[in-house]
Length: 366
Image (tube, helix red, strand yellow):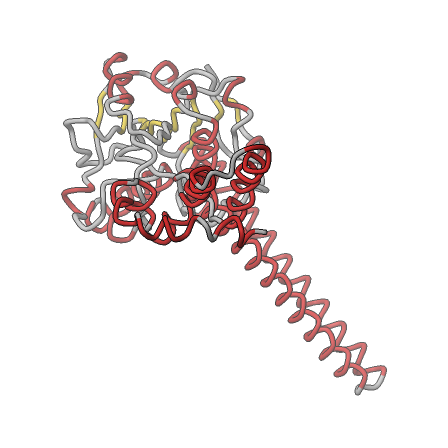
C-alpha cells in the first residue's frame, strides 16, 4: 500500500527536481532530505492530478500524507536541537558517574577480598595484631582529618573577625531569571570553597539577601562562616570604605588596601547588561575599579566568574603583582553569561563546592 501511494509521486518529483532549488527545505537541509520532507505534499498533489476523484481518491489522498510522514525525518528547530544535545551530554555524564561508581565498588570489593585472603592465612594472634594496627591507622587518619577541619574553621572565624572584607552584592535578583539565580548560587559556593582553602581567609559578606533570594542560596549556606546581610552592600558599609568592582569602571585596581571593602556585583545575565553595577555604584557615590585582565592576560578573554574574581583578589593580596596573580589563577574560558563580577562573569562548570561545611552563618551587626 505504501509503495502504491509513494511511487506515483516519484517520477513527477524527479522530473521537477530542478524547480526545487528555491524551496527552503531543499536548499537548507540538503537535496535528499528536502526531497523526502516535501514528498508527502507532492504525493498528495500527484494523486489528485491523476483524477482519482470521488470517495476513493479522497480517502487515498487523506491516507497518503500521514503514512508518508511516518517515513520522512522530522525537521527539528534550533531549540529542539540544543535541547537534544543537552540531554545527550547529560546522559553521557550520568553514564560516566555510574561507571565510576561501579569501578569504585569493584575496587573496594577486590581490596576487601584480598584482605580476607591475607587474614585467612594467619594464625589468631597475628590476625588480631593486624586488625589492631589497621584500626589504629584508621583512627589516626580520622583524627588528622578532624584536626584539619578544626584548623580550617579557626582560620575562617579569625578571617571573619579581622580579615579583609569582601562582599558579594546579590541585590540584582529582579534582573535575573531563575536559571541565572541558580548560576549565581553555584558561583557563591565556589567562592566560599576558595575562601576555605586560603591560609588567610577574607571576611566574606553576602549582602542584599531577601526572601526572594533565600531559596536560590546554595545548600548548607546556614553553616557557612559568612556574614549574611539583608541590606545591599552600599547601604551596609561606610561609603568611603567601599571599592565597587565593575568591568565598566574607568579606574584600574592597582593596589590592595586592607582597610577597604571590596564589593563584587552578583549579577549573572545571559544577555549582557552593561553599566548595571557601575550605575548602582555611581548612585551611591562610591569608588569603582576594574581588574586589569586585558592589560596582563591578553590571551584570556576578560570573562570572570565571581569565584575567579575572589581568587584573583586573594592572589593579588598575597603577591602584589597582577601578572603573577593572573598567571596563577584558574580562570574560566567560556562564553559570557555574567557581566558585573569585577570583569565579566560566566556560569562556572567547575567541580561542585562542598555544601556540607563546618560552622554557622554569622548575622552582621548593624
